[in-house]
Image 1 (cartoon, rainbow, N blue to C red):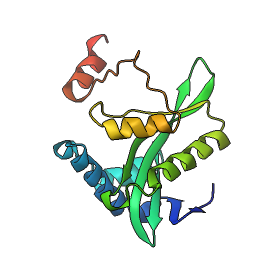
Image 2 (image 1 turned 90 degrees about the horizontal axis):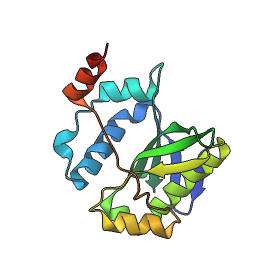
Image 3 (image 1 turned 90 degrees about the vertical axis):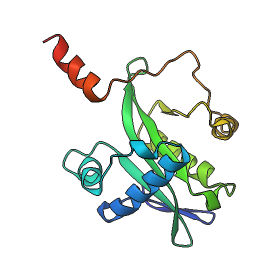
Image 4 (image 1 turned 180 degrees about the vertical axis):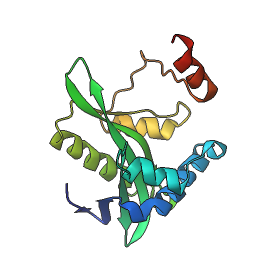
Length: 167
């Protein structure tokens, strides 16, 4: 998909030269989510995981008047029931001074269009339960909360323990 101009927001795919900016925006998002202490990402591992030979995710950046104001990091998942890929939005961030201007709507619309173009059966993401403004925003766009699902995660030492437990 090529770059598009949506109102005053220009959206484009990130390139390798954007890695420092991506890390900066990740840290801004983490600070907003009160999770800055959990960020261990570096420019080096972002370079490898986003642009290396086995890239795991993609990033789009949103600009207003040449100023970066938003990013979205996403990747494909798969639905066995639909037998189709899905698009999973890991993170969406809009800078505080750009909020309320339609930036988030335009970023999500861009990703939804990308999902349709790529033959995806769905587009999904998680949101922190305390972020009521985001939850309401997503509902206004037609997103449905999946309250019947509980997220589970294994990470750190527990991941290594599980990997070796039943060998």
